[in-house]
Image 1 (cartoon, rainbow, N blue to C red):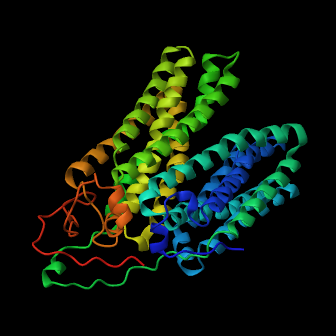
Image 2: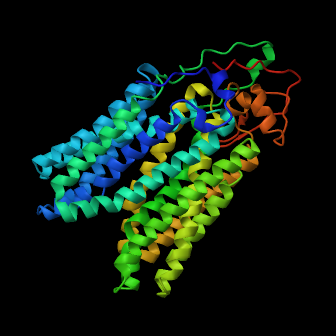
Image 3: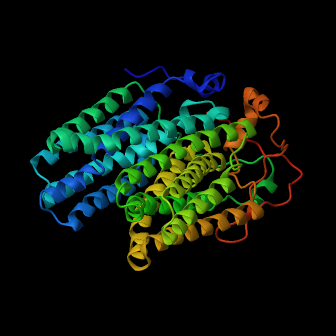
Length: 470
């Protein structure tokens, strides 16, 4: 049974994210769904190889999963507007779990690719819906913290279920783990039924103007507002693709005796650092009243982590130095994850919350897959240190884009009904963010100067009418 839905005004009066109806159910549902995904992530390729399949088919099972994930993410915002969050998330959890039973028929070419593709559809819809739903459920002033808590639940789920899948498969067989994954997804579907029956906000209506001069200020395209934060998370995700694919093997080369154990520990360290710093980044954003404070820190730290990995592998230093590298990279990636998502929510109107989530998730997933592929080719040519070093360089490119974005258009936001405008409309939020910069006029839409970067024009002598938040 769905939880009672509150109005936006009632939500803004809540004094804690935990009082938001449906928030706890969403966290449990997302943790269970990601658990179902994590259980089979390393198991399906292993089952293919154990069945005598080729390396290409083993990799293809993951590849087609990610392909249908990204394709589904593109259409999910429309689903959230038409049928709502509750049905979409129930369907996504169902599609993520039930097709796992199809592997019981075998892991030959046709069944493994077909059922992996179906599961990718469920995962794609889920990842977009869960991030956008949090923005709908919690008060605006707690959005950073709520996003961080969501990251903690996802991270803990992966840390628990990734090794559990391999252990269950090893001790009880592959058929057992398929059943466990389907059952875990069923738990997610049941919890999704308790999510309030909300629909994503409809697309914004054509604007009206109080003064003719307002028409002179151009509307900024969505892609210009989100390209730089999307690039930030994509570049770190590419580095993560290299870390998740090659760090255990690199550790094993340095220490053939204990390398297998240390490799798993390193990935856990990366995941733990991500959780902690993603949450911390959200808390900082809430206290300041706007995102962006830890973006530079995250990109620099992530870049340093990859650079240290390259140096340690190249010089053959102790694997303990890789612990430091794993902490640095995980901390940086966690900060950038939260900052990029909050920046998209902050710049876009409420009617495009689902699009922001779709863009963020697509950047994350595409970056991870692209990093594994491209940096894998580099690893074949220049060894693992070359892969990590190239990853650091890619992150540096994203860092330069963020610097340029900050200098040329620091206050790039949509012209009305955006996160900053909504914060100023909520009395409780205004009190919570009294230390943030006070801007009297809302007309801060930047004028495009380049394809990616825009500059804020001089403030006009009139005040723009803000659209009411409904």
